[in-house]
Image 1 (cartoon, helix red, strand yellow):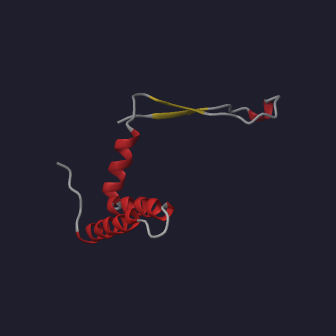
Image 2 (cartoon, helix red, strand yellow):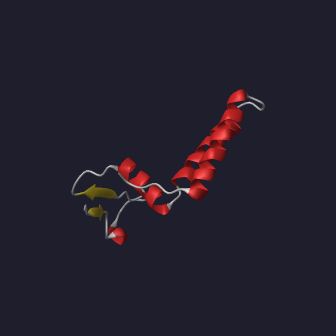
Image 3 (tube, one colour):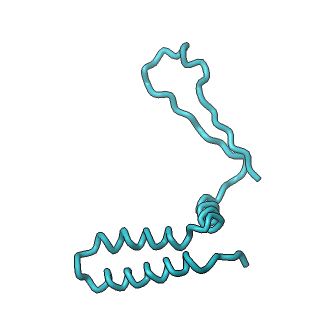
Length: 91
């Protein structure tokens, strides 16, 4: 478990500048945000659909009629079937 602290200027009415106030975040230990992101997706049940949407964005950016576009659409269909019928369990 980690604790996050936000430090910033609290006496804004005493500030003599028009510059935006910046804040800093400090944590008491390193955080693996990629691991947390994936864990949150898996826990929410949205992992497969998130992958499908990402691949759909890639497919949309490809030229129309491109072979890779059709291949990505097949993979997207498979991911959506997995989303509807399976859950991911941690090993």
